[in-house]
Image (cartoon, rainbow over all chains, first blue to last red):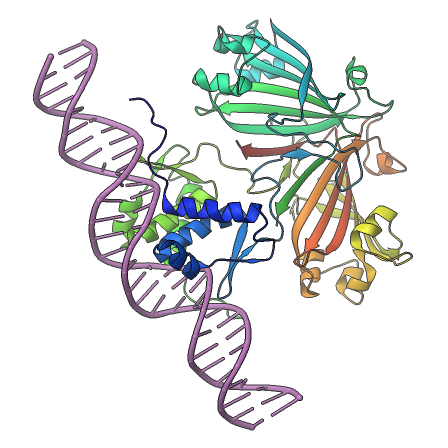
Amino acid sequence: MTSHPRATQPKYQRIAEDLKREIDAGRYRPGDRLPGENDLMATYGVARMTARQALGVLQGEGIAEARRGVGVFVREFRPIRRRGIQRLSGRTWGGGASVWSADIASRELAVDQLSVAEREAPEQIAAVLGLKAGEPACVRSRRFVLDGKPVLLSDSYLPAALVAGSRITDPDTGPGGTYARLAELGHKPVHFQEQIRSRMPLGDEAERLALAPGTPVFLVHRIAFAEDGQAVEVNEMVLDSASYILEYDFDA
Amino acid sequence: MTSHPRATQPKYQRIAEDLKREIDAGRYRPGDRLPGENDLMATYGVARMTARQALGVLQGEGIAEARRGVGVFVREFRPIRRRGIQRLSGRTWGGGASVWSADIASRELAVDQLSVAEREAPEQIAAVLGLKAGEPACVRSRRFVLDGKPVLLSDSYLPAALVAGSRITDPDTGPGGTYARLAELGHKPVHFQEQIRSRMPLGDEAERLALAPGTPVFLVHRIAFAEDGQAVEVNEMVLDSASYILEYDFDA
DNA sequence: GATTTCAGCTTGTCTAGAGATGTTGGGATC
DNA sequence: GATCCCAACATCTCTAGACAAGCTGAAATC
């Protein structure tokens, strides 16, 4: 009954990983031709469909593209992220350089200020979480710093009844963070919806983010949904919109 | 040599389209089980790998997901967009409802004010486009309206030398718009990079967008790259950040 | 030299099998 | 009633072919 680590790895997966490793190592550069179906058949001693499947993995991930009658090539433009927004940075347009990961799992970010409390959530958030009138939410308020500078204020709302007794109510949630604890409780977030808008800072936001006067902030609202469609977390984030630029790539 | 309309459609494609059509029609609803490999083999008289390929199309598009040993199901959460940001709307958070498509091909949007001119581009944009000092850019300035209300100011910069003589320099670019003309000139945009930030409105922006006092605007900078990696267009857009909310879904 | 044709390469589509692996539910057992 | 076992069924992996369709470059032709 124990979930075993794994059996054997499928051939096509191993071949795909080999290719990816070589691309990462610079053995094949953007625009270069990759070993084709026939090459892989000979090298690994597999059938054509298996070689195709391996190359299909790389194509599905946007790493390679096949040109019929010609070959398979490393893509010139590779997606910065697979799906959704992955980074906030000022790389191209000369803003302050920094990185913000959508899943807040970035190693560069550290928590500076932290408070965990049970209190009523704003009406709109309570509605999203399906809370009854007066029913409390677990609120994790954090300030993230990057290289010593404050960059992000985050308020995370979870139904208190849902997380009662779990480590989420501790300041230290443990490895994997909030989402790992939610998963343990059988409410693994599998779908996210984010919205961004902008406004002038309110209350002590300008102070906590060390904003220059007249600088608007980004507001990021994120709702995390579990498998059954239930909203299990609402995250409200406030970012300095002058220093931090939302960046993403996509294909047409 | 003439590009023929098409030969025959691959079987897996036809099967995939059949399934998608039935899903769109509501014959299969989110969470429902779809015909599996064996079903499709029997129904269409195809081999297993062909049936798998058809189902693979739907999985690749995020429409369906397979559960090993169980079956193939219509996904509960289907992506609003495949890649990149697709919509601006106020659906969930109660802002003004509207739609803005990332490729500006939305039917709901109409151009209200328009001017086309050749002039020098700002230094940063000129650098991105690879323009020499004093070299002019073709600038298309537009205001888009939605239901009679101004929603978007757009300045599109293209290298003047690149588009000389094409319809891009006309107010009416013709069917397909700017990108179709660029494609005809051999500079089809295949890759886009966008960045968003926010600031208070400048100049006559507040007036042109009919902004309430104190409302910040979103700035969207988009760079379009051609196959060879050359930047062929820079688009600067200004949006009302209070009325319009950037919305997107993504999978974890 | 310029053009056309075509052989040989590539990826794309498809078949008819086979066994592996994961899930489920019912029946036998305790 | 609770537990265990297993057959049936689903997807997943893989094979060894076959032909179609698109691209390229060199040879043949003009």
